[in-house]
Length: 565
Image (cartoon, rainbow, N blue to C red; front, side):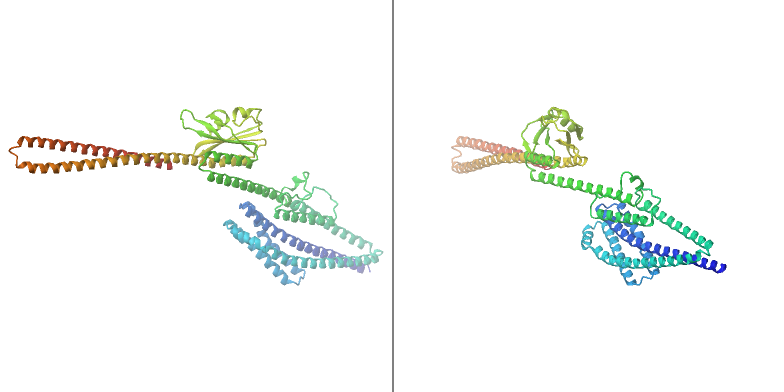
């Protein structure tokens, strides 16, 4: 009998242990499957989030979540399939469809990453607009719901089987209690030991949750199994919610439960990494907004410069008005270098804008005098904070207003300073706003250079036109002189013809009129010499005028070429 009791007790103990282990294994499998489902969601979200960050700012560091997900999702998918088949999951077709949908979407993300690397952004945006991830999510969601239902069924059956078996064991133990106390005590000892192991398992699970996901820094050694599972599930839900908000562009989202007291304990886990990623993406977004702001401002300044490139005053008025308004400053002034006199170089205020109105002021500042002259001389930007009363009026040239922040930027073009831009504001300008002023300084300087070149060109053209009119007048005078010379030549020819006729008449009377002939010959030679001298004089005068005209024409061409350069 004792042997039978011992055998029965041993068998009962073995059966009880088998039930506990079997229930524990089933529970572990269920947890692994559910964790696999959540991990699959997390991997897809991480891959999608990493790719979106890479698209926003193409840096390899933003692809780390994407590469991590690509490296791990396939193994997780295979593990999930293996456990489901071990559990007797029958819907293998749904497994295949889900794997195909996930693999297809991950391959799509890989293609989008390659397109982004090649800077083929229109194709990437076209894929985004197709929203193929929704189809994959729909298939996987159906699979996830079906698996959850299957796991719930297994879990429920396991719990019911476990509870029924435990009840049977208790009944048998009560029957054997009177005659098998030693055996019962032994069984109780074994059950207690298994319970402690189970508690240790859940303690390790809680520690893993703190180490890898989120640590709320609440040391509670008496946490129950349900509490541990609830904390783990809650941490995963917080991670999913946090990732979803970031994916939707909400960079102000906070991790629920993360405070200053426990922040130090969440530096290397999932919560800390996601918060760090949020801060990085927030900085990227801010940098993009500043870059867009700068680009728009430069574009508008360039547009104004093109519109008023023939009128320096209008150019200055429109530029300073736009810059002051765009920076939300109080007042601004545009000083242009006047170097017409080498011994008297100075900066002239050509445009002033304050309090949303154009100001009509005339100011000149010597090179090196005050802040404006100093900025021109040193070719460096000057910033001043906490400006004393009347300091601007004394040194800046903008009047008697006392702003809280002053920035003076030299306008450089081809390493030559052509002027100075001065902006005063009651609020301090950010670094990117000061950088913007320095960047548009070259645009403004080049515009000033173009306007000055155009003005010089117009002056030279007017001068050339005036000189051309003078040359035309000289040409007309020369033409008249040529006509007079031609008339003189014709008169000379007529005289020669008359002399020849007289010679014929006098030939018959040579002997009688020798003296008269000699006199006539002298008259003819004198007239001929006088006519030749007139022709020679007129010819020399015309050659000198032509040489002078060609020389002046060459000088005008050289001046026009220099102005165009």
